[in-house]
Amino acid sequence: MLIYLRVLKESFNFAINALINNKLRTFLSLLGITIGIFSIIGVLAAVDSLEKEIKGSISSLDNSTIYLMRFSFGPSEVPKWKREQFPDVTFDEYQYLKRTMPDMKAASFVLNVSPETIKYQDQSVSNVEVIPVTSDYYEIEELQIVKGRFYNEQESVAGAPVIVLGDEVANGLFGSDDPIGKKVRFYSRKFTVIGVLKKEGTGLFGNSKDTAVILPVNVVRKIYGDNNKMAFPAVIIKPESGNDVQEFTALLAQKMRAYRGLKPDEIDNFFVNQLQGFTDFIDNITGQMSWIGGIIGGFALLVGGFGIANIMFVSVKERTNLIGIQKALGAKRKFILLQFLFEAIVLAIFGGLIGLLFVWLLSKGASIMAGDFEFVLSASNMFWGMFWSTLIGLIAGIFPAWMAARLDPVEAIRTGM
Image (cartoon, rainbow, N blue to C red; front, top):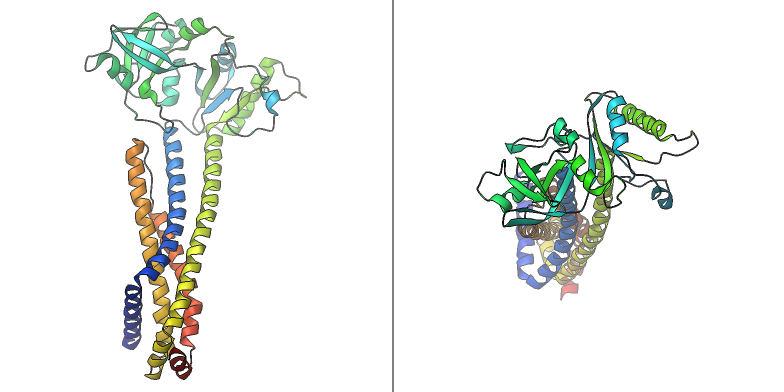
């Protein structure tokens, strides 16, 4: 056992010395593996970061949450020209579903409108996201209020002039002052501030409720009207927990078809989008991105492997005389084999470590520049990066090492001379 350990130690030391004595060759070999590992791990880290950020931005919503609208979250078999003819969901349809749908925990009617400017005395905040919703939105999104309260159903139905501010909007208008009860000007009207949302931080696309205001949807309906193409409506529905979501969505579609008077041979002119379907769609996209990035990085890593193999063949040729002398002095084939095999593996490992270092530095720099967006370099990605790097080094070094181990000592010495 000690003899084998001694052989391994001597082979390893010999490989390290060979790499140190040929610095330029070592650098060129390292470069190929470094680029390959950097490509693979960089792509995987970027995809993981993107997936984490997307899922984090929708983590407050339950996967069973349903969005009823005239658009689909993902690909659809319905032609685009036909989808463009679908009517918007209406407030009357929302009320009908709220009255008739069983096992429904909460439902909210939402209007998507353009950003506006909000003012308080001589202070103003521009490009504010407007979220006009009914009162159940508070329960669906699980909003957190740090000051004041959210508006109730009576205020929602009446279209009361009340408003809830995001953290950045509240700070921009009032600074350290308490905004509750203050009057702000919005849509050329006065609204009473009744609540402030907890700070969320910047989302994936640079937006969050920190830069938004929430107000009763009926206020905005009076301003925009029910047939304004500038306001895109939707109904958000949250079923009771424990229910079969597929059955629930099927019943929801059936009630919508009945309300709109669709015939049996007519297709649905609306989409029942489930948040789980959206997350599955995201998983599918990120999975494909990982595969494509892995294939591209794999080719780069393969080129690095060819580089190591080429350098090892050159190394064997240059040291043919030395190999002959070693074998003439009694060196076994396995010692010669391990000597060159270790050299290839050490090259690959160092190249992989340098590649990982570059990815780590890039992820730290990108996270600082991107603000709240965090790039993730997982332990799993680092492990697989080093695994593939080591494997490439092993494969690239096997044949040159085998050739060196099988050299005839006399012929090797003669060739070297």
